[in-house]
Amino acid sequence: QVQLVEFGGGLVQAGGSLRLSCVASGTIFSIDDMGWYRQAPGKQRELVAVITPGGSTNYADSVKGRFTVSRDNAKNTVYLQMNSLKPEDTAVYFCNAVVVVRSGSYYGSSDYWGQGTQVTVSS
Image (cartoon, rainbow, N blue to C red; front, side, top):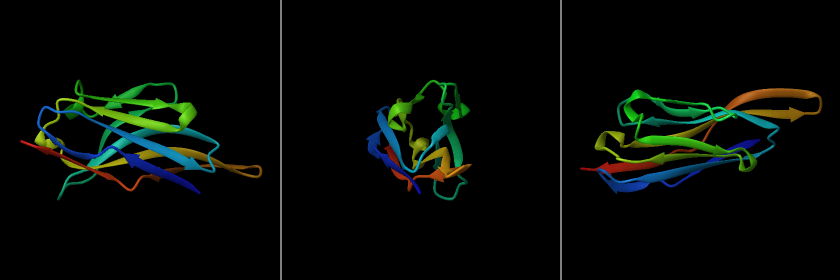
């Protein structure tokens, strides 16, 4: 099995910064894309940022220029540096990873999610 555990959420004032981390562990052969999603109360879960194993990134328009996603492939870890935070960034942030697992001669990939971490930005 594969587990994703997030760290780093909390309460911050508008204009402040937070850094989220997510560590993947378990029977991992390799990890493809890793990223962050968020879900605010009453809204659908939305993509925040995604990063490929080679370091290519994609961001939601609402966070471009303020958030930076990065990863450490050796540590199976993805980070989200969030600067210039706004009240509208308040949400539960979820880590996501596409993980390849191996069982004997079988290789398969699946989406895995973390449990979520609350980020609250006060005005």
